[in-house]
Length: 119
Image 1 (cartoon, rainbow, N blue to C red):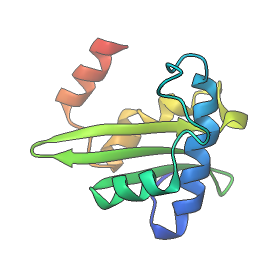
Image 2 (tube, helix red, strand yellow):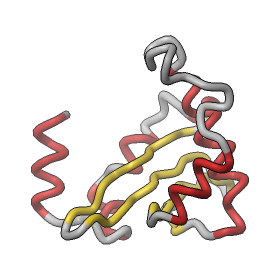
Image 3 (cartoon, rainbow, N blue to C red):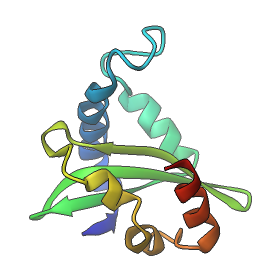
């Protein structure tokens, strides 16, 4: 189930981002990699600048997050992370599914066309 995250989810969002990012260690250039990958301060700054997080729950537990930001007339997908223990099970695809993006206000045909062209 997809739901909008709020301030009570801050620590979980931060943990999921940093846990999920471990899959990209060695792929992300060394000069861009940090431990943790995203600091609490950076996450707070991005939220303060308008990134809204949506979470994907399984059995009542938050296992993935997606950060969206409205910039003028475009909604950017700024972040999409899945907990390491939940990766390779299609949850990332669920985050980007038409059903879930529609619930976040992103279900329009143009977005689907863009997503399909980069798949």
